[in-house]
Length: 152
Image (cartoon, rainbow, N blue to C red; front, side):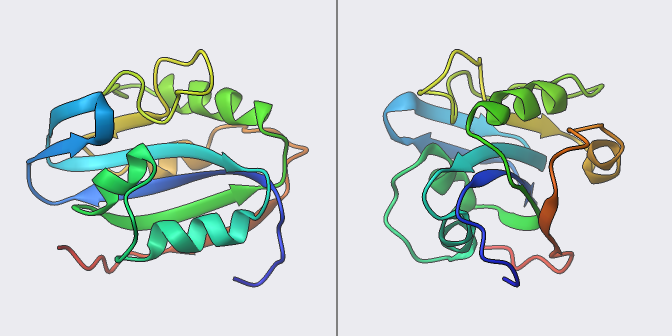
């Protein structure tokens, strides 16, 4: 990464090329259809390290997203400098995009009152997300297009 960013919010676009049944920690076993998933998160200590961890294939399963990332591939990453409370605002905006579906209630949202921080789309939603007015005051520090996914 090019910028030292200590805290902020982010979203990952994840491509799943085939339907998978995935045990998501204590949340349970869920069927994830083939398509695209957008996960919204935050890091209040070291955002760069959090993103790099998400992009690594080998890691201890800790967060809900780790279980999905084992089967899917991150195709795009966007990070923004902001406080943790902006995470829910970003999640709600993405969840309001037409055809966004919540695949698992409670996914990534155990520390807030949001229904989920994971959304499913049949088609890649990145162009629709880029048209959202996330917040004009949020500088975008990192954007990576990983259009050549390595599917497991």
